Every structure is written in structure tokens, then in C-alpha cells.
Length: 285
Ligand code: ADP
Ligand code: MG
Image (cartoon, rainbow, N blue to C red; front, side):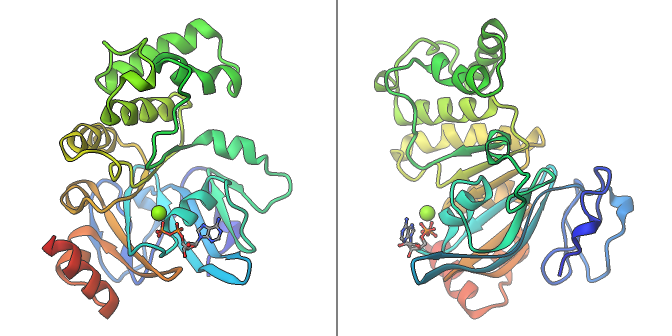
């Protein structure tokens, strides 16, 4: 298992993930050899044997994984696999009973860890847009910086405007959510998450409640973030998108990570029978 004392190592860590798959720097590599620190990989999130129960139902049954800086990881898996629950555990929205998760150097189970601080460093975009309906786009975006980060309002507005421009909404700055399309609302939600300068962005099926013609504009923003080097964990069923932007794909089922691999490998030659069946099913749709 992971050795806690190894990390964080002055911002550098050697990382080996699932079955000899080696997380990238900028390159996708797969080999069986141990990684050395010269690749300069940095972990942003590490889950260690996370178990979570809802009552007597064990929804997460020992999840371990590691996400390095700049990495884009897509999580796939059938409904009920525990994907959303796992994301919610990472940003401290769900308590879990066993194991631990480190986010940006802080262990969630450490009683000295301020969960609010962890949450502030983790940007989360949900399936439903979760905007404040009584606030305009820009007001939604500056809320966190002003009230959580204590950023001066003019600075928050300036940064917020830049972010709304980045997501292509410079003409919708003062619109209320009800006047925005689903795709626009989701882009505001992304800008709002980015406004906190997160260490990592978590996306939970961000396009699955959008009309098909609006999916592309949201994926476009996410693609741009990936290209800029944002560390991201994305739960999605958009397989073409996953193939294009993901460095690595994790297949979850029934509360465990069944298989993880470099994206093209997982899709072209899944090893586990359950992964094979799932991949075959989603690729034919
Ligand atoms: P996924 O996102 O992969 O579809 P979820 O993490 O949403 O899966 O849910 C995993 C399992 O946990 C499901 O069986 C779901 O019904 C159950 N579950 C999720 N949230 C709760 C909750 N708050 N209370 C009880 N059971 C829950
Ligand atoms: Mg879900």
C-alpha cells in the first residue's frame, strides 16, 4: 500500500498506479517498470482504501487511486457504481468510514484538516447546474472568491469577467440563470468553480442533463481546460470526448475500481470481463 510518509515530497513524488500503469508527465506511458522521481510527477489527490457505507450498504468498497498534476482522468461505470459518491468524498461532501483521501497535501481524516479549505481548493461541477437562481452570472462567479477567499470585490469581478470570457459568456455577464440555456448555465458553473483557483476540477456527468446540441459547447470548455493543464476527474458517458482528452480511464463497478488504464488501452483492450462488457456496450451506442 502507499506509504504516507512519502508524500507530499516537496511537490515531487514518484507515482505508480494500478498494475504498472504509469501516470504521465505530459506523455502517456505504459510500462511495467517502477517510476522514478525524475519524471517529476506530483500528486494532487490520493485515495487510500476508501470504504463508505450508506447504512449497511457498502457503496465504496476499498477505492485507491492517485491523480497527478495536469492529469485528466475519466471515470466510467454503470449507474450505481459509486462514481458520484467517490467524487463527493474527494471534496469532503460525504463522510467515509475507512481509508483516507489526501487532497493537495491534506488528509481528510486528519482532525487538523479544515474541510472547508479542502472544499475551496476542489472545483466541482455537477450534472445539474446548481447556480443561485436569484443571482446573475457574474454574481454567481464572484460569490466564492468574496465570501470564502475574502477577495476584494473589484478583484473578484475582474477575475470573474475574465473567466466568463474564457467560457464564451462575455455577453451574458448580467443574465440570470433562468435566461441562460443549459449549456450557458453549465459554463457559468465551470467559471464559478474556476474562480476559486482550484487545485483540481471534478466533473460529475456535466453534460448529461443538456440537450444534445448544447453538449459540445460545454465539452469545448472542458477540452480547453485540459489543454491548459488543469487537473481533472470527469465522470462522463461521452466516450468520444473521453478518448480525446483523458490520459487515463478508471472503470468502476459496484463500489470498486475494476480496471484502470491509459485511455486507448482501456477502450481497445480491456482486460476484465466486466470492463469488456461495459466498454462494448457504451461503444456501440
Ligand atoms: P453512480 O454515480 O455511479 O451512479 P452513486 O455514487 O450515485 O453511483 O450511488 C452509488 C450507490 O449508492 C447507489 O446504489 C445509490 O442508490 C446509493 N446511494 C447514493 N447516495 C445515497 C444516499 N444519500 N443514501 C443512500 N444510498 C445512496
Ligand atoms: Mg452519478
